[in-house]
Image 1: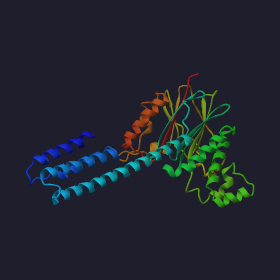
Image 2: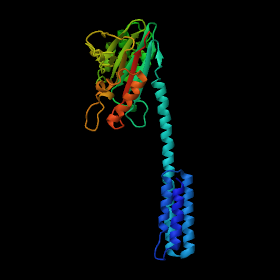
Image 3: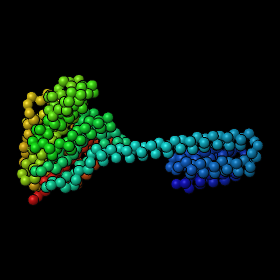
Image 4: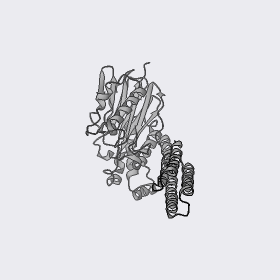
Length: 371
């Protein structure tokens, strides 16, 4: 690429020297450093600018002399413009370094916050994909996690109200609570209540949390214990979630839906939406629940696949404002392994929205392997 500005300098210099006196092409030499700055670094741009200034000096010597006002004006203009181009290129390089640092921090945050799901856990084959709405972010308010218990595997897929980096704190809170408690609570409703209480406790006003801590009252295990603390914040922040328990030795799955889109069960006969009869409120709004969390039980046979997703997938719109038809698109790939299924789904979703989503999106695929 550097050959292009060098060739321009040579051509302009030769044509200028051979042209009649009334024709002046010397000012065009500024194009060379400008073009170089678009693809090369500061040092290459500086070198090309120096060559352009030397070429214009040579033109002045061969044609009119360096003492003429015309050559002096051209040289001054070329030096000033070249200095500006070099300065802008230096600023661009600094911004690129800063952007690279931001990306590295974002990638590190993603690895810590959203740990990659294992390819195999117990009798399950897992795969996950995350698409952040913010262009330079790798992670946002959608979340997923898996944990082993003595009898099976527990999964959490959630969506913090809001999108992008502002929702990272709530996502980190819920993921930490799930990883700490998934293997401690034998019953799925107890785990859901603990997670709701953890979110609700975090939403309480700082002074109220301090008062509780000072009184020796630990973080509540039930969301209703902190209802008064959350009353001012419950409409501002909450987390929709699906909590799953998949036993190793029983071909079923147990599900609690906390205001989240229903997962899709992909089986030999087609696709079934696992809609809960009585979905619970989102986590952080547990004080609104009329009764204990209700567990839904669905068949999950060897060879079946489960697709869990956030609303960033089904609410993605194309240029004609049409929602992404997830069930219709997945129908063509429902027999594919989880990794292949998510690869095709990711490509199709991005093509539907033109390459960029308006909201974070996470998808987890689970296959129960044949015995």
